[in-house]
Image (cartoon, rainbow, N blue to C red; front, side, top):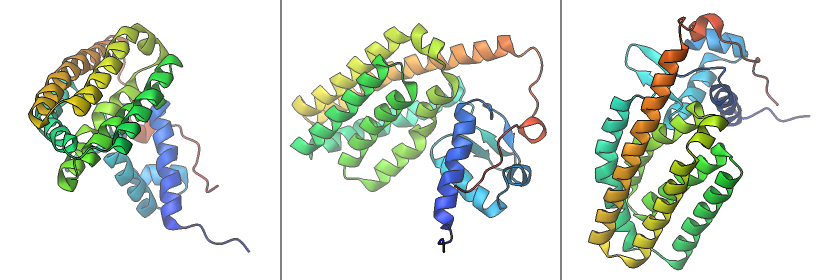
Length: 251
């Protein structure tokens, strides 16, 4: 006799199912998610769907706006500026704290993330490149040994990394190959600063590099917005009216 499926397992599988729908364009940036209709379409309970959506919110794939509802994340240039206003203060602090606690194993972990990032870039594998990129930063936040700071950075920065997964295609990747090459070298500079610099230098260097990331990110988001504006002569139907997803099935 098979054991009943655990609720947490169902939630995780459902969140991955919806995540894939977002990343493959079945759910588009800015589309509203109507819980009762999506739950009915996927054949799951609303409480299970709500738990899955909470997980996706933490990952930056969806955004809840008070009484307006839940939407697939669409990041704007204004939001990028707001996020970086916080990130430019918090991440240099995290790096400065981490620099005082780094071990040989910590450096090895960061090297592994950079190696995976570079190999994914060579394969034009945006998903694994961005996953490794985020893992690199999350490791530094974790090495700060400051849990509130780590949590804040995970919350604030999630949508920055998600933007590339949702909005960038293979063609976009190729068109910005030079940007990604520079991005990798700047991550290497961050690691070098952690290895050689004191806390004040690390803080200064991280802020300097993160500001470069800010400008690049703004350019990419603006480009995506311009492209979207030029390609949407007709208004896209809402998720509640036109969403086409395969029903979710356990297993």
